[in-house]
Amino acid sequence: MGMAAATLLPSAQAAPGNFTFVHLTDTHIQPEMRASEGCRMCFDEVKKLKPDFALLGGDLVFDAADQGADRSKKLFDLFTETAKRLDVPTHATIGNHDVYGTGPKAGVSASDPLRGKKLFEDRQGKALYHSYDHKGWHFIVLDSIEITPAGSFRGNIGPDQLEWLKNDVAKAGRMPLCVLTHIPILSAAPKILNYSGDAMDRIIIANGSAVAEILGKGNLKVVLQGHTHICETVHYKGAQFITSGAVSGNWWKGERLGFAEGYGVLRVRGEEVKWEYRTFGFKADPA
Image 1 (cartoon, rainbow, N blue to C red):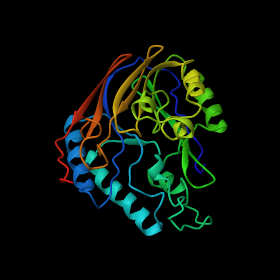
Image 2: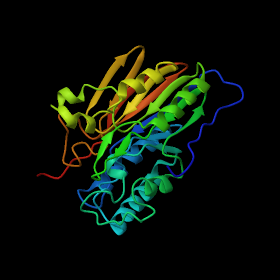
Image 3: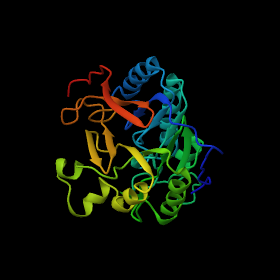
């Protein structure tokens, strides 16, 4: 990891307040497929809500993993410019398509200092995993992507990050927790999408039960997940594990298993949080 993981905690914990924020995941922005137009439509709708901030659930671009430097940097430039329309602070988790130049088709040298996760990290200006506080809530952003030796990926939280997470949850005390991850921790998606065997680690975090156990030692309220492009909520030990569909729907080709392009709106009242999925009227071109 490049930047040191950050934990920002106040000297005195404030009582949980009332606020609204949004979860925008799997934008898959690109010049093709009218993706940038769709993102503009979505972000303009979000801005009208005047949320306190936006959580970006990964796969911001499509696709940096199998692309060279010029294309990858142009994709991130396109996302950065388009996201200015939100006009609110953002925190982003890395997705598998945000990893730069590791795929076999990319042709990117291992000596490129931005190869892997560094390009994403530099563009976001924050550590790959970090935490922050807002109106009495503690927010944790995880890095759920493990790059495999072959240049692919699997969902996993490495030992250094697990140790950091244990300490961060402990320091948060009884503050309500909200966690952001790209690949789900707990999900019914493997059954819904018929994943099995080794492919399971590409659709759900391999050590998700260990991560859930650590989070369960704190006052966990909600985990926001992406990656699968479907909407679902798993209730487990008093917490909601919410997958908020995808801004891109079926990768800008229409609905994904009946779920249109959309985003999550979360309204916090004290220690309670309610999630709503909103669409924004994008109509994909006919196939």
